[in-house]
Image 1 (cartoon, rainbow, N blue to C red):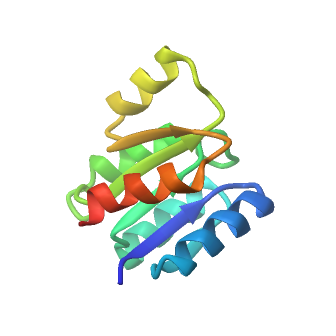
Image 2 (cartoon, rainbow, N blue to C red):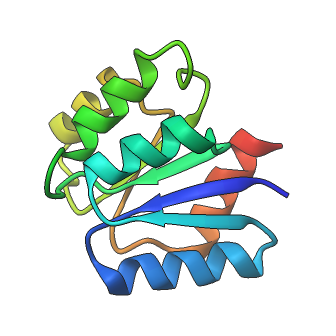
Length: 120
């Protein structure tokens, strides 16, 4: 069973994604903002972080960059999940160290396939 940290400031998105992933057999932790995400990821070292981009206290790009530049957390897989769907947004997210970039609304099959690709 993989541990996945779901980070989104929307309670609805957190709940929907968490239920989908729990049903698929993953252990889920959640965070509501970037600062909380950094703290939880550093303390618990999940297998993966699903990370929104637009959030309070640190945006997803900042969180991704900090996790990937930290020797303790650099190996955590990060999937950015955002409504920003322009090619420049995707490019910037990948430049920050993201392993994958998905756009909202998230589609369950695509989300589960992307997760399986990195946690297989």
